[in-house]
Image (cartoon, rainbow, N blue to C red; front, side):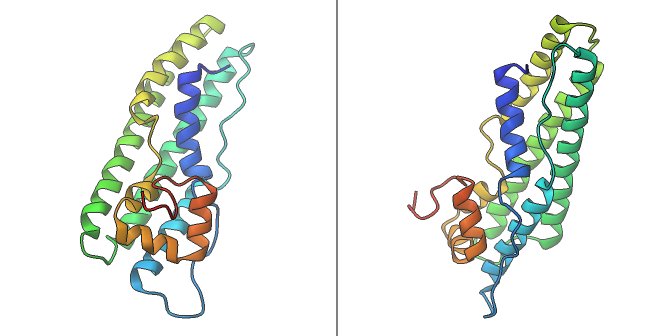
Length: 192
């Protein structure tokens, strides 16, 4: 069993990657405004980053194996966050006034999440695990690195903080549906 704190932080990060925005091709037959099309790219990147990534079931009765599973999972999560950042960076800032600032914030928070996951990987990798007690200690230590990002909801949430970008996500039917289904922060249509 993973300590609750660690499990919540890992789970939230996994959700951002795995379920934040289910795979959906955003777009329609009519030419959408550039910011709506841009939001579609973010939807696609988030879906790609989370495809097939799931928190492993950890068996405390096999502590060495459990540690290996968590290291493998967290390493994969870190790599996916890095790939997500690279994909978003290729697309560039959203084409709206003030979009560069929102984009910068989203990337900075994504970087912070990836750094925290990387620190958890390093801590867990170095830990000597021989029994259930040492596994719990190792997971607790790794979990402390994830505390800083336990409330992180992902780049879509950061981007949706800008009203123009929230509208771009909302105006893209596939993205709006995915954000709502994932509980994508800021309230999908409530204006908060």
